[in-house]
Image (cartoon, rainbow, N blue to C red; front, side, top):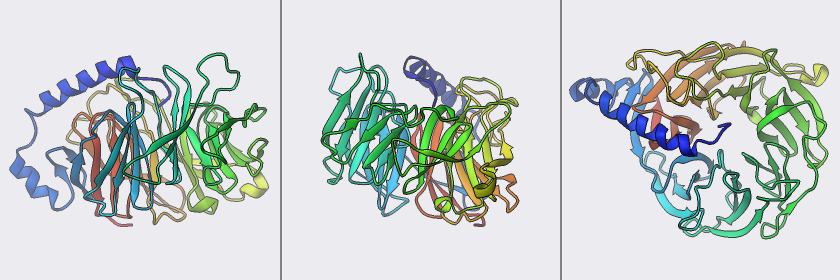
Length: 402
């Protein structure tokens, strides 16, 4: 997300609830829904699914609006505006809540916002940017009792802010990079050190929203243009390749599957608060990386934008959050093409097939009633979780080809 929704988010939630109540009077009868769920499509008690997509269950989020997650091993670390929750997902269709930890003392303002959680399963970072600027470090070794071990408050008077909108781990969370240039030395998690230098200083990528470590010391940035960086020196990275758009669109998140050895890199854009879909809405994108070592460029091969519909076709007739992609993840079987799942706000979760030529086709969808899906995370090659601002998180099973 590129802008805070605290005040508007409360209004947004009330609109969502009203819409959900209204839709409940025009849903297909439960007997019809039951008849189709077995083959992976049709309406369910929670939303509308395409063929090859089965709704498994809904897990309400206990203490606030779920915004992002990270799955490490058999555990999922999920944050909201108010809390950190850890789930045991060793049984992917039956996650067990291990703990919920408040991120602020009672009476404190809402903490906005930590998307796409930065953790290695031992330490976890919460980057709080509104109304304060505080970087919090948690020890999460004990999944039943996470503890805050350090915080860096740069709310006022600091030239270099510790907390950025998103934070990413480098080198097994011994270094942190922020979306707008923050560098944190975290070799000692109890004593984070703010480096008085920006990692993106002098580099071509602008409008930074996220970075991802493709493999140790090498980073792909969600900037315009995107940058592939040699970050083995985390304070002074070097540009290896770039990929930009003529329309200068905002890039929300980017990934390069298979530790940067895949033919394709993937990205999403983001556009918020547009009631109707159009040609400028945030899209899912595929980028060809062939010969990047010689050309030093990534080239977009295709992009996909959602459109409005009639709800039963998997697309809402209008939007409150917008026709926009958000956090996504490729299926574990992805190799020079394959299946990708992406959160699409009002349009729920979309499944895409990326061909060997880098072309995108819609392979499936799940549209929750009152959808506001932020992110998609594969737990196995068949089970995927959808993190939803309004609906906690939901569990889907992909029954199509891989």
